[in-house]
Length: 286
Image (cartoon, rainbow, N blue to C red; front, side, top):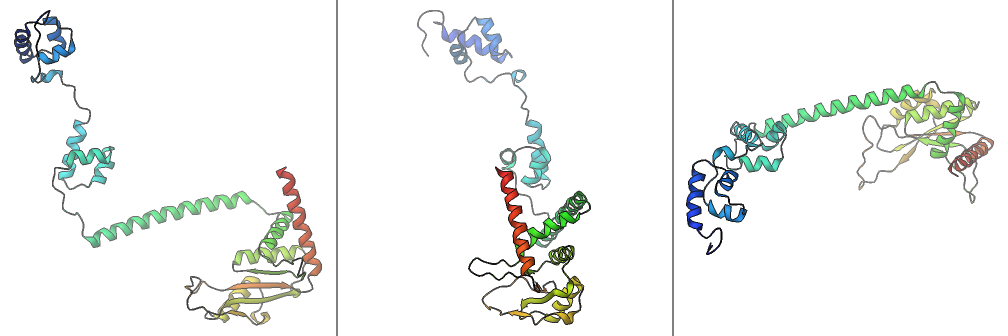
């Protein structure tokens, strides 16, 4: 750099003095004050190539983390483990330890699978426990069900799962079909609330032909508290070999069909109850 005139004309002389001061442990600020050089570009040119003294270097806040990361890597820790242990980013871990040899696997593939399955089992157990607590708290929220609450629940339940007449096909029969034992119990309790005589009820099982029909009859008879002999001939669903069924095994019992005999009047009342329920809901939305 040429400085032929002015204050910095003797650049080489200034550089010799600046380098001597730098090597003597001076900071840039001290050199500036000593030589009265207040132009930062000139000041940096004067000490170019001379490293700053150690005492002027700011400590790197991550130096300790880097050292610890390298130590852990040499002990065989994975990137994920180091990241969690030190609370730093994966990119930082990679930058700090990527020159170190990859640690040998701590576990065989079989051990890895066993550990993974053990971890999954613990997580599922914890999730199951949380579900149980949530459901138990929800049950307590319900309290004792009043007759009116059961009545309204039954109306909604029937309209969701029961048979409905169509304007073009008025059948007006109360027919209810479901595969959930709890739903069946609520429906039967609702019919009792309506004083529907149990002798008017007809039961039939709807089930796949490959299932155990006798076992299904016994299962639903226990749920409905009736004798299996009262069941009508079951309706068997033909099996489609191209369909992969999931509703198989000992827990599969098909669906229970409950028909109320002489139920035209009951059915029309259900339609009226539901229509009024919808009307009041619509009023709330306005």
